[in-house]
Image 1: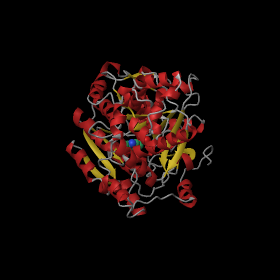
Image 2: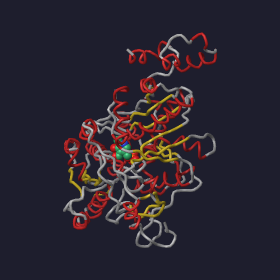
Image 3: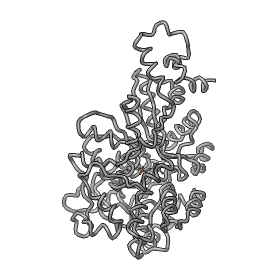
Image 4: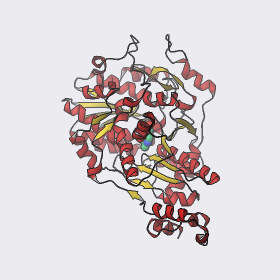
Length: 499
Ligand SMILES: Cc1ncc(COP(=O)(O)O)c(C=O)c1O
């Protein structure tokens, strides 16, 4: 019944306060302004879908508006900024150009990529009326849902872009790592569409916990190898040093890079962290902003989970652009797992992006490239580092970060699934947790804040995690300072990189 009332609310204009108080007798004491506001509110549909013609035609590059640019990637041998020539051995040429471009604000989305986007975009911006009802909060909650494609997450937005540039360059194929499996699945789909070979190194713990995601990748034609593996030099070395390791994104990256650089016609592609990936993911924020502007909605708080930072960087992009240009202000919150707290407990320093220490050095919030987080069901958030763009924004006080424990994340996921109907990915549920917490704060203070969060994906392949939660056997592991120190000890030491 409650649910039906909530569903009818936008159309029948039931006063919000009545829904929250559970009574229908307060209309007489409502001021004209309150009633007018409710009427305006009632026009906001459950889902705002843009027309295809309203979709962005360019990506937005936040770096163009940043006064303090993210620090350049360094060559670990010379400690000098990586050049185009050095990077093009690993990445496709066009993607290297995007990676190094700190000044172009808008980059046109090639027609072929826009056509692919049309297969699953625009994605809906959803008003979480049912969650608001459940929480009895005056806050207005919106989420941008990126899980409406077969790969199940936002990762497809960059996968198709990276596969497109590889194809354009005439390459045979690409290699990559995958944690939770969403990125690998997205890349497999994109490569199948464009006829490119795709080799995926999948973090061993996910390979074992998520056999079905592995099969989706294979169905799309990718080869999937559990990492660390005996196939690569770096994999053999990691296994010798850490026998029985369940792997990490850092290990899998090392393996994928080694394979790309030792096989003719292959390049490496990465699903997060890099500037180019945040650029592609800006489509999330651009669409959100167009939809919000259309209905006169301005978010007060923008929340996203942060693994390597791509969905959050994409969601906040146009809003952060306004903030950087001094036009508007928004509160931005990155949410990370307490078991892998790069922002909240990491160091801002140059570090390797991979465990094998073969990748360039990036200046970022890091737990040390040797840090292997405890097995956590949000596999996509188990990366030791963070996007250099987000790291700089966080360092400059332009955004906040918080960490949450996985049991509380799954409590939020369960509530969300029950009231909003979508089974969220554990990664996305980190953002849900904090959105709920912020909405509950509004309930205490009576503030009607507008909250926007990124619902990055669905959790259909995460049912082992849901099973653990339902059986009450999920545990929360928070690393001790000593655990973290071991990771910090591995951060390279050179003048200017003191931690
Ligand atoms: C559903 C989902 N959300 C979020 C993330 C985190 O990645 P990022 O911080 O790059 O958005 C992942 C990574 O695999 C993911 O699969």
